[in-house]
Image 1 (cartoon, rainbow, N blue to C red):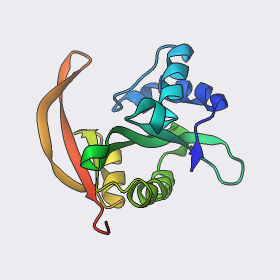
Image 2: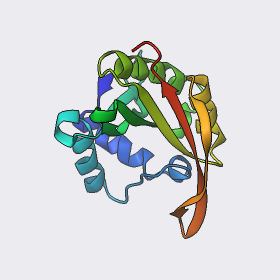
Image 3: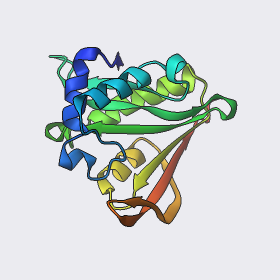
Length: 165
């Protein structure tokens, strides 16, 4: 796992302002400065007290592919929400499965989390399938639970329990 570095912020802005990436993603940035501020906050769990993210990189070159991390870390309940995204040129190549496995192992072994949750727009089949491949179980659908672009959307909830804790 690689911490997000200052030189990654440009790629994060490119990704989280890209129409294909943010189509089903809840975070988007309209300026480089807002990306920088958010990533500085998320790069340190002690500072943010609720989330941390890592860069997904190619092993051979170290090129930035996307990011994976947690939000809404609740130490008192031993749980957090996991999220991820990739630049489009890296889709469907197994990067989420590989990086997800590494991050999940870290979160369960080092942070002693018991539960990881993921909230996915109901139409986002690719993210739903990636979560299922990581062992997450679909727990249900919250119908018309959020507003995006002036329309109600439904959100699926997935969870993975640490059965070894």
